[in-house]
Structure formats: structure tokens, C-alpha cells
Amino acid sequence: MFYCWSKVFFVYLSVFKFDLTEFLFFHSMARFNPLKFLVKKIPAPLRNKYVLTLCLFVVWMLIFDKHDVMTQWSLGSTYYGLIEEKENYREKIKQTREDKININKDIEKYAREKYYMKRKNEDVFIFVDEK
Image (cartoon, rainbow, N blue to C red; front, top):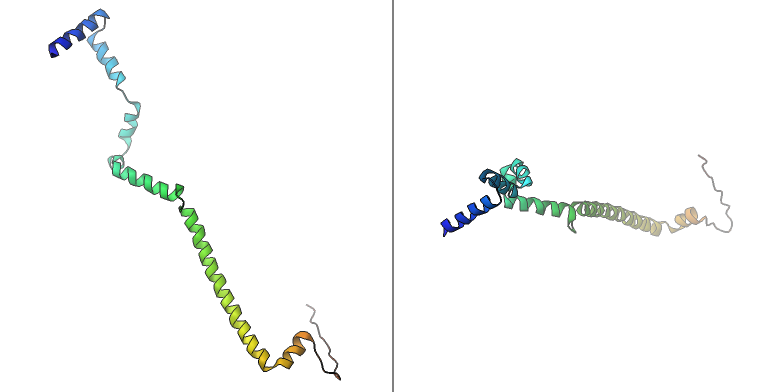
């Protein structure tokens, strides 16, 4: 069978007046892949399909995913901002409770200072510091 096909091949070459070298040259050009040269320049570990898959996964998670790095960064900064705000409100609540205790102790003094209240036979003088 091989002999028959080889005979057909040589008949084809003689009919179209091709050299065997020309045929091999064109045949090799038909299989020439221009990207193969560039692929060979990539280091062998990076041509591994598992490493390539891992790299694509990392790029996907860092850039394209719903929970990418920038989203996580902004959520983290928001989280720590809310924690600081929570501490601030706790301090304000603590201060307000102390003020409430002081008001209940000296309710008359508080009313005179904050609302400028006075008794019937008193005069109130307000001194304003000009800065």
C-alpha cells in the first residue's frame, strides 16, 4: 500500500514539475507556526498548563472578580472607619451620661448656666470673651 501511495506522490511531482526540495520547502512552510518562536522564548515553568491556569486564576481574582482587590480594600477602609466612628460615639455616650449625672446633682446651676434662668429678685450679667 505504501508503495502505491509513494508512486502517486512522485507522479504528482513529475506532472506539476516540482522538485522534491521545492515540495519539502513548501510543505514545511505550510506547517510553519510563527508563534512557536515566541512560545519557545517563554521559560519552561511558565509554559506548564497548571502554572498558566494558576496565573490566569490569580489575575481573574485580582482584577475581574466581584470581590477583587480594590473592592476588598475599600470595604476594609470602610470597616475600620466605622470602628473608629463607633468608638467616637461610645465616648460621646460616656460623656453624655457623666453630664446627666452632673445635671441631676446640680440642676439649678445647670439651668442658670445653659438657659440663663434667674430668680425674681436677681439680675444676670453675661460676659462674652471676644477672641
